[in-house]
Length: 240
Image (cartoon, rainbow, N blue to C red; front, side, top):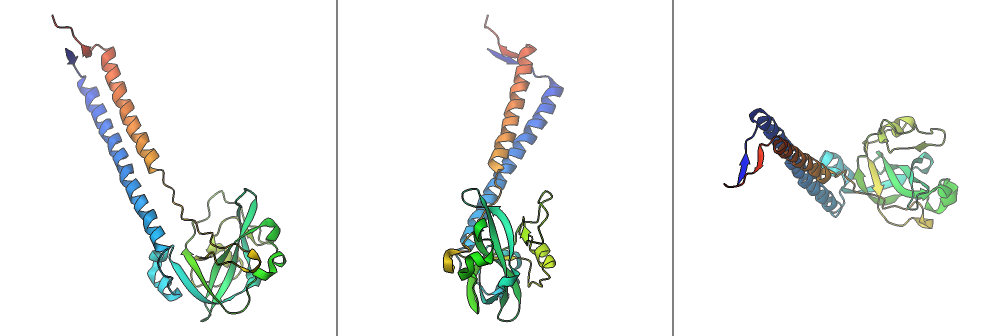
């Protein structure tokens, strides 16, 4: 028949640690469901009708990933570029162009992606949209520049993160707001830049974290039981 004579102090400490580890695991599962809900909400925003600039500004953070409709013209001479990697791993650049609305406000529009061979505007002259335009794009507040992000090449107007506030300061732009409007996939003459580059990405490692905490709880339980077995306090006793 089984017998178990637990060590009181060790049992108390291990019980508390076990409860904490399980609690952390369940908390990560809660965070997982919250993150999945957030991702679903953002995807649903992308399907809603576009709003005006005034409406987007009034919405504040709720405008994130909403489509916005703008009327005005591009100031192509003010292009700047954000380095990234293309679909095949080679260097590519997001083309960020000031857009002046009909009422004189300026926004920075990410017109899309170009390969390195098309970085020079003359190599994609048909795509330099002139005159009055009506565009639709996604309202997006980029993440802040990281500690290890390289410094921009100001002479070539090349940046390594879409740091809207810093770009505006370096280019002496007065923006209506520190956001990017990411152009939709409407084709540009000549094919470049290639719009529709909005990617809904959220770091979501909560399941891995939950499994780690649950694994640690299971490991603690195993060590606790093994210790009692090694001390002859847990096992099976033959009936006599």
